[in-house]
Length: 182
Figure 1 (cartoon, rainbow, N blue to C red):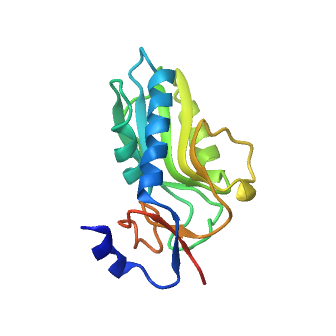
Figure 2 (tube, rainbow, N blue to C red):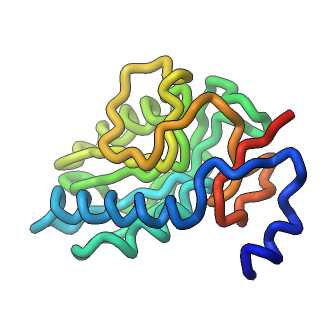
């Protein structure tokens, strides 16, 4: 699908925040950093579903070391545009991460509650190393003390869609990241 055709599913109240080209350039930078940071190891990257799968798929193409992937699905939004503050596991990990070098890959971090939840849960399995990567971070919304090791872009507190990010499960397939203006 070309960008021109895809624009047919972009409403008039959307504006581009981050282009596909800007995303790919930043992922290449993050991939090089992860390659250097994890040289000599075989890390496992854990994609947080649903939104993180596109970010994870593109990111691993820029990492130049052997790696494994797994997925976990959690929910703190339901079908809302704001986090409920309550995190629940919908699909647990399949892999054993004990003693492993782990990078959790999120699409967006706002309150930080999901990252805090995942950090506590995965730390219980005693990984050798536990790092967090996010495509987007909204620092003004973060209410927890968390460490994000790899951040694609810091953004303002706006509701965004595209590149895996959704609005009630739609618009994940947009190639750019858009702000929805209400």
